[in-house]
Length: 229
Image (cartoon, rainbow, N blue to C red; front, side, top):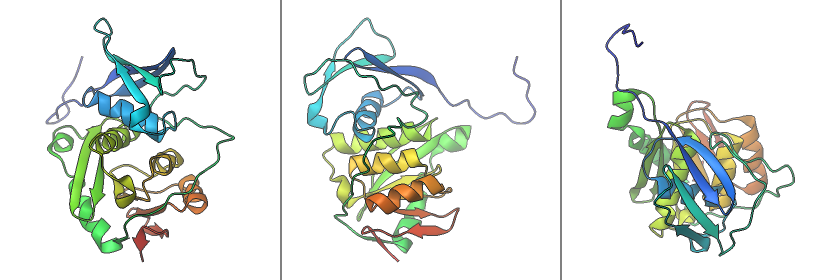
């Protein structure tokens, strides 16, 4: 039973969505929209696939809330699992370098915070927002109950549009964690910006990879090729 304690908002949507990579299921609790973009972004940003060209989708009319994928034509099994709410942590993973094809000023990224204001959040207060932003402004924006999912949807949408991510930055409503930082590195995004906090684990990723970061809640900039300070 729901009891009103004031004027209630709309409820944000959340369902389980499963990405089958060969025989391996990745079960993700997410907002049931833009699911192919979510799958592409998840597979690339978690290092399961290297490019969109490697990802092959298969129709499965009998499958509800799920999608079948082969990577590079290989339907083999994997031992990796993820809830979709946290990163896939590989203790022995080498953190690669990220390179910037564009530079942004702190004033530019601060002005972009307006892109995080969406009607869906105002109606529910239940969604995270992620956007891919370039020199000419907003390129892609997506939302989801999970901040990792919102980032994956935005990344997947941008890649499916053929956007060069090295010339963009990822803008977030949620905090910058190690998982978010690693998604940027694996996807080739050189700068991550958030109105929320940045965690010390994310700063360590930035220092090893060259990823730049701006947190307006923490009031810090982590220097990198993509940011002018």
